[in-house]
Length: 291
Image 1 (cartoon, rainbow, N blue to C red):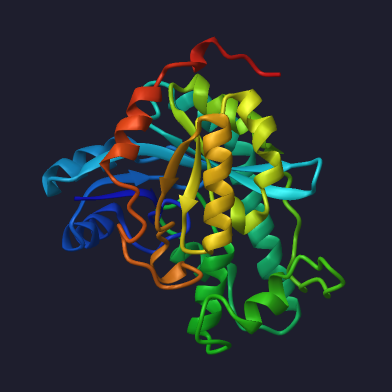
Image 2: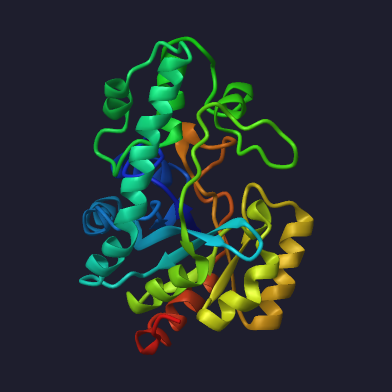
């Protein structure tokens, strides 16, 4: 029995539909799969119903894009067991970011065209069809089609989209995003009856942020992740013990759009973790208010 708690579909930045993801999950022996698309709950009810056809329990979730303004770092918050009927509130909070991302992608494409790259905005939208908008991965997909590179991530991606930190040159198509405070993301998930978990803290350097997120209602921390090394895992374990957080894990599956190849269920945290998340479900939250 494998539990997959971090997975994306073509509603955000994975090229595969929920059916295609579930087919892969079935082949890998995954019995429970959380759909955690970026900043949207679109398609969750359909995903749950589709999962029943495959004999796989689909957990309705989300991955919200937050920010640690004190330290200048991104911070992603996973939410599990979002209650039906609460999606409208989440969508209202997230929609400005979704719109901003899509608009920024259009400007990125305009910059690339001006720089001589033979791609089009229409093609990028076609590649992203069915989702919430165009992501950088869709732009890279178009660049691969046009013969500029053979991979989503690599030298070209860095050249185009690098943030320009630590003395590095900023990419010609880099456009900064305005994210919500990470603790707001925690509270929004709680208000939707969900269980908020800090995603891949090792990837974004979020360990120092944990005490503040705990005050906001954080319930878990992702220990096992493809981009975590042993040091990251141990740091996450220590914080989980200190603050009574559930230790979770997931493959962060993005199909061919992933930073590295991963198998669904390869970072399964076990049934005990799922049971712990269920036990926390709705335990706090609806009494929480924004701070």
